[in-house]
Image (cartoon, rainbow, N blue to C red):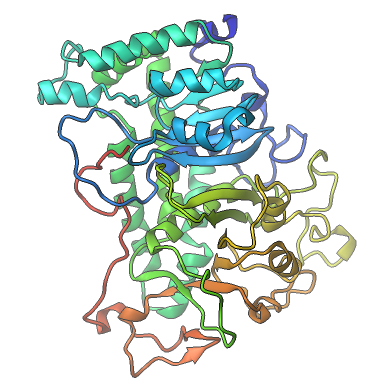
Length: 516
């Protein structure tokens, strides 16, 4: 009970002194940052929860009187992500986590994209979680929707909040004050230079590089900036409260009165805005314009279970991996991996048939001290001082710390931000992965200490490569290279009248629609 009261009484300008918020390292025990700025664990889990709220789902008719927001949820155990969930047609994100994990939620930390409703909170507390963190925007039982429905021009105190929202707020406060889990709002300022670092590395990542290779005349910087601004506009509408006064009212109803005073209030809004900007930059690194993940033809017939996922889902999963890559310990290249499996039947949660198997990023062995191992790349002439024999690859971490076994009768999809190297290919095959979604920019390259020669020889695995949509390539002009559309034979966008954009749930200019 005493822990839960810290939520109200703690100094708003300080992070709560728990292990998760103090830790500035990644997989190692060191408190020293690496060569480049990296996401803190708290901010990574927070961004993943926001992104999971936007998981692509079938559009349903919107109930004009519905005050319920969809939510994203990240389940963490011992600093490892063991669950990624979102609200669905019937289940809230918290309920989906209860159904999937049950009593295994004990001692886990949960990161919500909004403050959960009392219906979910009571079950989560009962499961014995150790910490519940939420994004300090409009809660799951919306206050914004209830005020706007009663008074669209509202800008003053929340006199028009619905009875349902008020009752839920009272119940949540009582559950919080009488519960053992630490219920809090965890946000950390970005590391100096991180926002610029994310923008620059996203602008020049393998996915945008492929677009440049296909069409050297394409202004990829302009394309990236346009995509980033579109994402920023959509994400700001989804996650930020535009009016300061209304945001203060929401915080008060959530028991966060201390954050309504300056300078804490301005600092909170600035931290929220910076995180949304980071999310927009990461998402823009996998642009939607005429590109996607398309199957590479195989000379060997593939089993029926090798069906693909929709393009918008593939893109969403790749951006999950891109977020993970910003926790890397590699001084030069961050790589992220996420593995999803497709079950036999769709559940009522937002991810449908998909459930998380594992995720990871490249880092030094767990438990080691940072800088204990060599950190140089191939430019270092002394091979003993190179990093390659010590770094655990993203795919290796995802397979090692997987949350469940890989079943041979279920399609299992690995999404990785860079082409798998020769060290990882046998592991991927041996683990039973059926699909790989990636960029093949390093394919067939031999860089000495690390090579990518075996990826092209993978058999009985469906490979979905980031490339231009065949629908915007001229039929007579293309040739097949390694079973996919050759990158030097495609027409530019202006030459094809049949261009089609890949759509996601946030690709429209209309206001975001909340989902259950």
